[in-house]
Image (cartoon, rainbow, N blue to C red):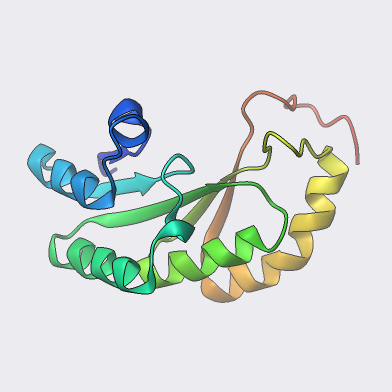
Length: 142
């Protein structure tokens, strides 16, 4: 097991004070942890290509594994994050399926995600679906 931190570890620093990925990388180094999860509260799709490249190089140089996370499954968001995960050598894309505008049913989630799984399997990147307690462990459909 590897210890790590997340952008949600420092929610207020990230959201209210506008501290970004460089600050989180520095914090991981300061704490001596080797995993950094950058979740949906710090959207990686807002970074430029050069910022993604810089993050990838810094993480590699500092022996920090990046895990990426996002919110929402519409509009090719998962494939966007798959590309980001590949660039950052993340073995996982964590997703919260709900957005303020979209609360898909379990059937809709499956319908949207299933066709994209081939790309995740090809890249050997796991898709981790975060539930947020909306669905029970006993499936109510399928």
